[in-house]
Image 1 (cartoon, rainbow, N blue to C red):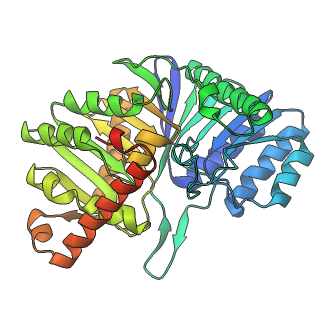
Image 2 (image 1 turned 120 degrees about the horizontal axis):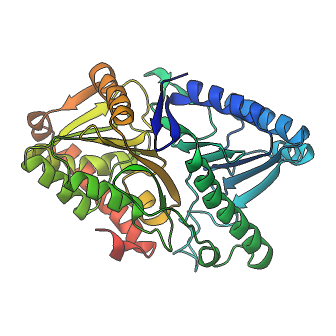
Length: 393
C-alpha cells in the first residue's frame, strides 16, 4: 500500500489508478462490520464492476448494511440482472435522476444536465474514499495504446470519514424522499448538503451542488491559485475554465509563478477536446506551461499549489462540473501529502506527456484553429441553451 500521511488526526493515503484503488477498496469492503455507503457516476458491468459487486454482496449477506447510489445516466447501461443480484443479496440501490437524460430536449432542459458525478465511499464511518475513479475497468485498449487511465483517489481513515458519511446520508435520504413523493421532479430543491467550511489548514471536504455549494470547489481553486507564490500544477481531464479562472491562472504566471497544466492528449470526446485547444494560445502567451498526456486517456482531477495545498476529487474544470454536476473533492493542506501528489504528476509529465510549445501552436494550420474555435463556440452555446449560459464566466 502507498505511504500514509498523518493530517489533523486522519490517515491519508494517495491511490493512483484502478489496480491499487480497487484492491484497497475491496479489502476495506471485506473488513466492514456495520455499514457501507457508495456513490458513483459509472458502475460498469465489466470485470472491475463484477469484483466490486461481489464484494458488496458478500458484505450484505454477512449482515452489513450496504447502500449504493448511482447516477441515472452514467450507470444507465448496468444490466437489470446485476441489479437483481444486488437486491437479492440485500444491497439497497438508488438512482440519481434515472428518468432524465442529458439529451432530452423538453421543458426540463434546465435540469437534464444535473448529474451526480461524485465518487465517494464510506465504511463504518471510519474509512472513506474520495476521488475521480468510477467503478469501471480503467485500462484502455485501442490501436494507438494499451495503458491504464491516469487517475487518483484518497483513502481517509479518521474523523473526516464521519463528515463524508453525513454528506452521503443526506443525499441518500433526499433522493429516497424525492423518488417516493416527487417522481424525480424538482429534486434539487430537497437535496441540501452540509460540509465543513473551507479552511486554510488541514482537510476540507469540498462539495458542488445547485443550492448551498454552487461554487465551493471553484472558489477553493481560485483562492489557492491567487495566493500561489511559486508553483501551480493542475492535472485535469476535461479542462474548459471560464474567464475568471483563466484570468487567475494568467495573472499567476505573469507574476512569476510557474503554472503547469497536464491535460488530455488523446481525443476522447471530440467537442470538448478541441474546445480546450481554443484556450491554448492565450494561456501559452501568458507563460503557462501546457503538457498533453500521451500514455493513455487521462481521467485525473487533481492539483498542487506551492507544494503545500492539494486537491483530489471528481470535479473537472469545465462548465459541466463547475456549473451543473454534483461533485466532491478533498482539499489537503499538508506538505508531505502535496509533495507525494506533485511527484506523481511530474513523473507522468516527464515520462508520458509532450509539451505544447508556443511556436508549435502558432504554426498550426487555419483548419485546426477554426475547429478549435468552433468547438469552443458550440460548447458555450450548449451551456446557454441549457439555461446556464449567463453563469459561464
